[in-house]
Length: 331
Image (cartoon, rainbow, N blue to C red; front, side, top):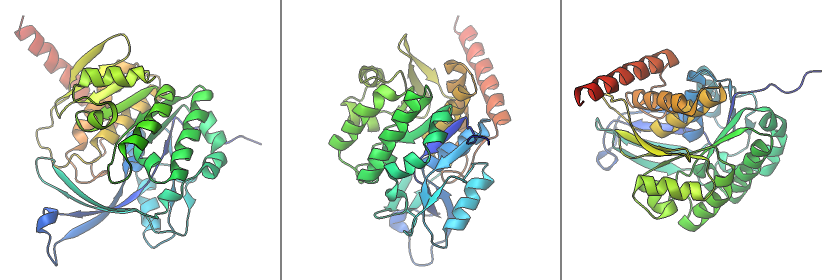
């Protein structure tokens, strides 16, 4: 007999039905055109990990309604292994999304009592051999905020991967409509010591989680909680990386035609985690992640633009050449 299949990256979280409207939500009227797709931070990150070259499986609970089959088909089409996804007789969560050409976003969610919110420790135990045999796990504060059972599932999964010597990537991803600051901070305090890469945003998440709008101070505070490495997105054009030896601002490759920033942070996390799992240095993994995230904002929706790794690598090379030329010009 053979053991369970081993993966480079597992992603624990929620998949959402995405309804995208072309107008601002406040201007939406009867008959406004819309399209249906599938997203959620877990699917976005998983798709990015696959594109970066990692064998990737989704650990999630989806519904049994009419949208579940196309939802799983979309994930599989992106290269994500969905054979371990569990089913629940609940509706899938959904959200309504509007975006403009500047990448600004508006959301309305429907996820109370969703299939995804039934994620539990029992599910995690059924995946334990996968978790302890994988190289890396991605999960988030959103997953932990879906329900009390989801919170415990996130913690148990993270502990299993950490104890087995795997890598954990965690994004606090604070959502005030899902949880309180106190609950999110409590979860962060337990997750940070298990985390190899903590990806967060500033000022939004940093203010809510660690009471600062300064990226460097935010990184230091996350590291004080136990996170080994912290990546802080600080606007569209720069990222602060603190690996414990130094904190440095890195320029993000520019996308000349941004459409929608939905899922860009998830794309960063999925790409970075995949490349770490595949043996890249932290510096290279982060460079690829920034490039992939920049490319991703050319599409609409969370999985509207998942760049191929060859394209990501080409942008990294071009960006490095640009930075070197700019450095020579100033000396």
